[in-house]
Length: 349
Image 1 (cartoon, rainbow, N blue to C red):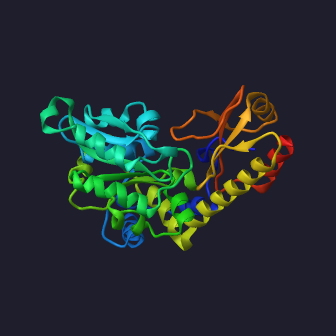
Image 2: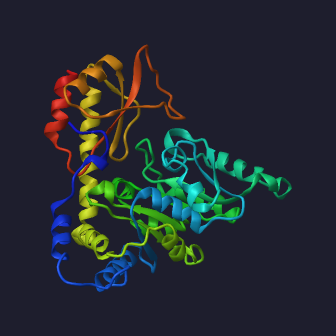
């Protein structure tokens, strides 16, 4: 019963097989091989335009380098108050940018409130130059609490960003889950809605280690190749990242895995809601489920082998927590089974 994180899941066998297939022989290094170029073209097809793709080792590196690509002197990146970049990446953005800061913006259940964003940007007028200058807006898709920005939500944020001449970045560690949940195209969810660059994650969705910064707007990120090199994020044997992405995109494997994870999350949510010992904190939209359990029940589940985490109360939560109750996060992956979920349900019953 492994629901701690989709990072705990293994690797899809098609991706492992493709890595093995490309293991022999030689190939041009540093991302200039034939396979690398083929994968870059596949990204172009996916996003329906020519994009620039920069492989990196982790989602944290993707986010931090994305911010480095759009940094300004005294730069301030505006994000949701509970964004991974703000609370879980140990100051990587400030390190990679040489001192840029995050300005947290409130919003219900993981999504930035557009009006609050507009007010926050306006506070940094030229008369307040010593406070720093906004350099970007970043949103997380899917969010840290399992919700999803609709296309209209993204456009609303992008309209404010454009009005203030700020690039819009998307942290897409669970981008596949958001696309599978909404059914819209990657292009429509990103640049057609005003997103300029995205941290494109695949590690959480069945790959060994495959993340990238994808530049959707050619007017941003002109020095990213150099910044990535300086950060030690340029792979010599990049073909092994490309091999993962090649299999990932073949026959829409990436969407099939994300769809499976989302379906398992929906089944998990139904199981928790039906159990007398638990209830949902809010409805899941992707592959993360947040349940309200008393700590005694949570401890019994964990003692029986269930892996999950207690979670903080997010902004916008309008439910009720009783004495000794807490919110707990359960994450489904492409490898989650109905047997795991049913076993959890039996324990909750």
